[in-house]
Image (cartoon, helix red, strand yellow):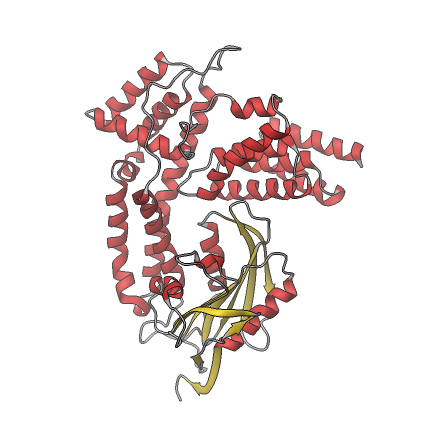
Length: 482
């Protein structure tokens, strides 16, 4: 197997060197399926995804690295490749991934101090935070530098010219090269439209929120295309700006002159940017909230007069069981006597739709994170006749826009009524499969059962979801027209 595996590694490497990234990924995946886990193949598969410089491929690269490290936890090339991916991540878009860089670098130094991998990770970088400060992402520094350059120049063109001149005087500074390349990218046709997000990120977030408010205020009476527009309005500009910045970083890093052997890293002439603060995360939260609200509320009861299938839909009464899978009810909306509602209200305030409910089970620390609960059951009742299969993917969409890593997705048996789809995932540095969420959908209800329990198999997760759904929803025997 080793000879065969070595041949496969060489074939993947050759495809990568030639820039045939799709072929490299296909060869690596096929070799892993045929010959089993191999650290070199996992590292190459991750690099073939990361080289695409797109968010979806970055997520796939992280999955490849984590699967490789699950089987080979001390493999230096794998740890190094994963550390480089994490260090290049935006701390606002992927905060957990960016934060993992420090621990991965420390692990490489612990396993092999002075090794080529350790030296590579400790080498020059535009993004190293000052001592005693938390790691700062490339995008955060990049936007700070561009914003300062624009404030100091009378026009975008002049800011780009001055930045290029300063980068020329410091040929070894990656940070100056990135600033110059980013400003140059903004001068190209149509790109200046994205400058508003850099110049005034907080005002931009307020504009997005204001333009989304008609759909939010109309709530369940809103047509689906208004919800879609609200979600896209929050998502597309941010993704376009991220792609522009990522491309500028890649071009600038590749074009920067290498340091002479043994030369120390030159100090940057630019001041250290402040670390991300509350308002930075509020900007990201605005976009994600608009996106998630638009996704969930799009499946709420439609505007009067909308055409629906002629059959009736069931009506449910909602009640929270006192225990679920051995864990006690800790927080509930609608309110339950003697049970706090503060944590559960975090889920229902965003989706202010009649019939929404949220129940959390397990021990919650004071002012703690609802995600630490043993289980959560969230959803809503109403008219869901004709809702498309894409409705089942709303929780997955939320995960993909968070810093979670999706490990597996599958359709499950929903029982005699409706549809059921499950996803296993992990956050931050957790073991893959630390959480499972199963979303159900039928004519009269929609919801998700979230199990914060590692290692659940498909059947157990689906059975738990069906049990949670059936314990919360009680069919009144009436229909919409009764």
